[in-house]
Length: 388
Ligand SMILES: NC(=O)c1ccc[n+]([C@@H]2O[C@H](COP(=O)([O-])OP(=O)(O)OC[C@H]3O[C@@H](n4cnc5c(N)ncnc54)[C@H](O)[C@@H]3O)[C@@H](O)[C@H]2O)c1
Ligand SMILES: O=C(O)[C@H](O)COP(=O)(O)O
Image (tube, rainbow, N blue to C red; front, side, top):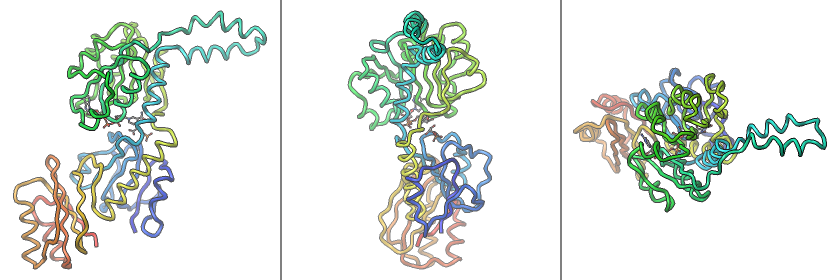
């Protein structure tokens, strides 16, 4: 029986895949071999000894201590693209909210309640206070052309905008999905200098923290509108606020509220709503549960953010799944450890990822406790498990 600890509310579309005879899941487990999580912060969590994997039902994994997981042989998955449409739709809404004072106008018109027949005339009289420019014909700069950035860029083209995208690590898949008309730049300054609207869609990492900062904002057009539906630390909050206060930045729309931003009249803060649609909650939960089940039951790794993806077709009774350092001769030592004990390898696959690697070996010979201890003792082995 596998124990799956839940953090956050995970949609039943995923939980229903965890069959009752093989899985127990709850928010209350104290000993567990897998985690299903959304945005709950796991940095301070003490992992139980048997924890094998963490599946993030969503894209961002900055709430998970990846380095610690890798060192302990814990595989972390996310669900690429599963909530991208939901975020794209909210970003399009954010573009319009940043441009036209829809929120101000809607709030103001409510204050006309009680004016009866006069409401229409009063609305006509006051509406000019809430006017704002159209987005068609303006330039949108997209920082990060992944699942969300590409969808936003393509949708903005459809809305008549000129679009420039920046992503130094653009994947082939993303490139194939970018609509004709989206201009690509290898220079982030082009985005800063040429855009009327800038939207950020990169993961939060040391290398991307503050990607929109004081220097970048200084290069932007006066009256630029900035959207951040990716993560808080990507836009330097003090620099954005200085821009809002000086008038350089006309509006900042973000999915990540803070005390300072909530005090800014020209900042629109949403309560991290990007992925909060039933469709994307179902998609993410389903994909996360599938990844977790596949890994626990077969050792297959798909969509991991810290271990290499690996699928080895099943050809023998006993499968040994080994997380190890990516170092010379290690696989030879593993196979010698087995062959010295008369164990024949029927099938195997191995893949590295930077400094670590993952190997699956299959045999029809039983592994004694002594063999298992010998495998664990091979220098460079982080952990291993046997699936029968
Ligand atoms: N608001 C929400 O609810 C919500 C929902 C989903 C995702 N997100 C956030 O949005 C981020 C992006 O999501 P996604 O699904 O598009 O992820 P993704 O992995 O598909 O795309 C991220 C893109 O960023 C690019 N990138 C990485 N470093 C970069 C850099 N220095 N400069 C420019 N580009 C860089 C990558 O090459 C990749 O193409 C997530 O990491 C997450 O933090 C927020
Ligand atoms: O990175 C993500 O996928 C989003 O920020 C969504 O987070 P959530 O699952 O907590 O809504």
